Length: 204
Figure (tube, rainbow, N blue to C red):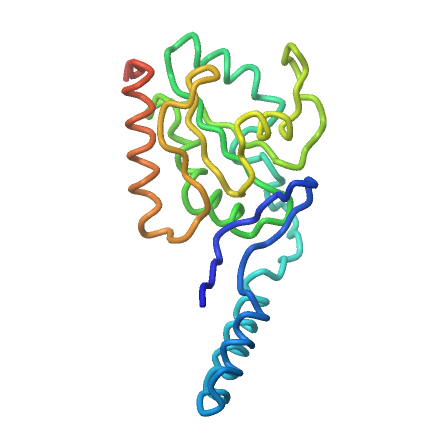
C-alpha cells in the first residue's frame, strides 16, 4: 500500500483533490488475509485518524498573517519580475492552494526564511494561488495566477518553480515531504537557478 501525505492535486476539471490514503485499497488488502484482518484494521484506523487530524484546518487567530503576507503575492508579481530581469536574478514562484496544509507548512518552515533573506540570496520570491483566477495587477497581457500555473503545467501544490523570464532554470520542487531534507533541495535549486541566470550578489 502507498500513503502519500504531501500534496494537493488540481484535476482536469480544475477542482482540488487531496491525494493521500486510499481507504478502499487498504480495506481490500486487509480482507485478503483473515489472519491479518485485525492487525491491518488497527493500522488502518490509526492511519486515518492521524491523517484526519493532520488535515484539520486550524481556526484563524487574531493577528495571524493572511495568505501572501509572508511571501509577497500577485500585487508584487510584476514588480518582482521586473527586478529579477534587471538584476539577472531568478524568480522563485511558490504555487499554493487554498486550504492546503502542506503549503502552509512549507511557507512557515522554509520559504518565509528565503523571502526574508532574498536580497542576500539574490533571488526574488512570489507566492501564487493555483485557484486564483483574478488578473494579476500590472501584467500585460493580463493573466491570473491560475493561468500562469496552467502555462507552467503546475497541477500539484505545493510546487516551487525557478524562472528566468519564461524559462525554467532549475529542477522544480513538488510537494513537501520532510522539513529535514527539503532545505537542502531548496538550497540546491536556488544555487542552480542563480548559476543559470548569471546572477550577481548585491553588494554587502
